[in-house]
Amino acid sequence: MHRLTGPVPVYAGLVSGDGSRPARVDDIHERALAMPHATVEYGTGENPIYQVGGKSFIFFRNPRPDAVDPETGQRYQDVIVFWVGSEADKEALVRDQTSPFFTTAHFDGHPSVLLRASRIGELTLDELTEVIQDAWLARASARRARAWLDAHPPS
Image 1: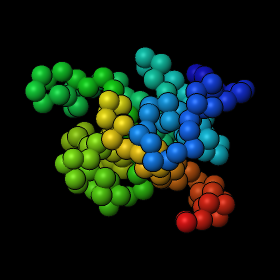
Image 2: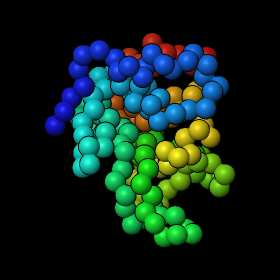
Image 3: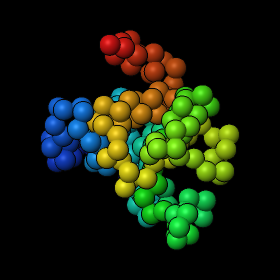
Image 4: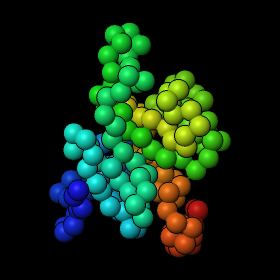
C-alpha cells in the first residue's frame, strides 16, 4: 500500500481561486488530500482511495456490472464514490435526474453517492469542494470533525 508524502502534487498549483469554474478530476485529488489527516491508498488498478482515520471517504471505483450505460450496456469506466452523512443527504444529491450524482441498487442503504468523472464539469469547484468536505466529515472521528467545523464555520 502507498501513502502520499512529500510536496503537494504539481497540479495543486494549477487550481485557480475561482470557485465558480467547472470542477475537474484533479480537484478531487487536491481537495481530498487537503483535508486534515487524509491519506491515499491504492486499490485494484491503482485506483485512489482517500481515507481519514483508516476509513474511506472517496474512492475511484473499478467498472462494475451495476453501473452501466443504459444505451450500450457497457460498464462505466469512470465512477467515483463519495460518502455522505445521511440517507437524506444522499437523496438530496440524487433526487434531481439532471444531477450528475446517481446511485445504483448495489448502494441501496449505503451512505454514498456516485459521480462519473465525465460529468464532473457539471459541478462548480465550490460545489465539488462541499461534497468532498461533507464526505470527509461523514467518515472522520467526531473529534476531528468537530475541530474542522470549529475552524471552518459556515459563511
